[in-house]
Image (cartoon, rainbow, N blue to C red):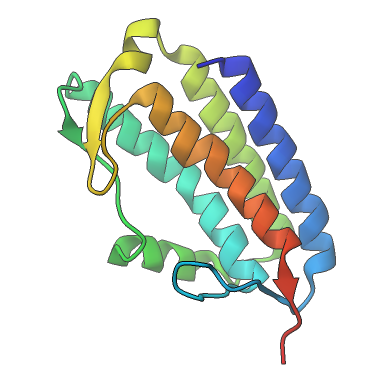
Length: 159
C-alpha cells in the first residue's frame, strides 16, 4: 500500500464531495443498484464523516489483538451504523465537511504510523472474510470515500 497515494486519493475525493455538496440541493442520490435505496445530502455527509473514526478504531482493535483473524467491522444493516448516520444527518453542511476533512487527516496520520508488519496484519470482516490492514484501509477508507464522491454526482430531483 502506498500511503502517500492513499492520502492523495482521500483528499481528492473529499474535495469532490465538497464541490458536489455545494450543488446538491434538495436532490437525492440515484438509486443504489443493490437495493434501490436513495439518500439525501445529509445522510451521505453524515456517513462519510462517521466512517473514518469508526474504521480506524476497528483497525486499531485488530492490531491490538495481534491480528490473527480478529473480527472487525460491520455490515450495511448494523443498527449502530444506521444510528450514527441518523445522528449526524441534520448537522450543517459546513460542519459535516469539516468532520470529513478531519477524518481524512486522521486516516492519513493513522496509515503513516503503521509499520510494514502492521499493514500485513489481518482481521476477519463479517462478509468479506480475511483482510489485511492495508487492504482494509484501501477498501473501507480510500475506495469508500471515492464511492461516495461519485454517488453525489449521480443525483435525482426530489419530488
